[in-house]
Structures are given as structure tokens and as C-alpha cells.
Image (tube, rainbow, N blue to C red; front, side, top):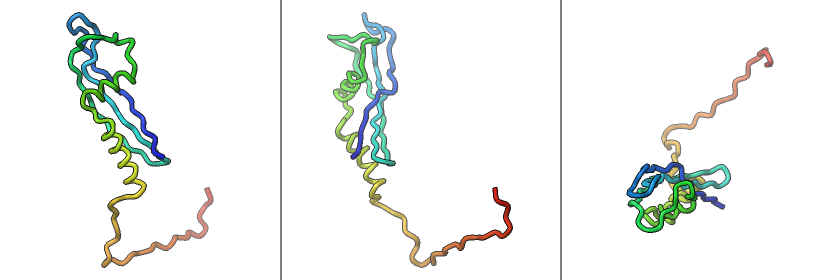
Length: 120
């Protein structure tokens, strides 16, 4: 089963915007996915309009709140998660593989035995 997680990696802040201080204008986000030894990721940035109405002070923000702003401002959560999931599925069951050229004989190397080699 694929496990997906979202994180906010960085916030860009205007020190002053109107009467507010430390106003978030951009959030850098990342969606990570894992299954066993396989992983996928997608990242981006989302910018926001100056606040109008309710304002949360910077020190009171939560990652969940900022992620919800991203989803409300154009970050397509379902599409991003589908992309990360597909990355992992393509590692598990590759849609394209490289095969040896059919006209080139396959050479199997014989193991080399070195007599009287010192044991380390």
C-alpha cells in the first residue's frame, strides 16, 4: 500500500502588508509517497493574495492550514497524489523496459579465480 504525505517546506513572508505583519505570500510544498523500497515525489509553490477578512498571525499558523490554502489556490491535491502514486507503480511494474539487442550475442562472464591470493 502506498503511503502519501504532504509537507510545507518553506514560507515566503512579507514583513508588512497593510496593517498586518508577517503575511505569508508563498508556500513551497511537497507530496511524498512510499511503498516498500519505492518512492515518488512532487513539489511546487503556491502564491496567495493579500489577506482580506480573517487573519491568522504567523506564529499561530499550522501546516494543515497552509496546505488547505494551497489546495484552495490551485494545487490539485488529487492530481498530485495520482502523479506520485503513478511514479511508484511505474517503478514496481515499469511500462517501458530496455532489452538486449536481439542481434548482439549475450556474453556471460566467467568468474576469475586468483590462486594464492592473500586473504584480507
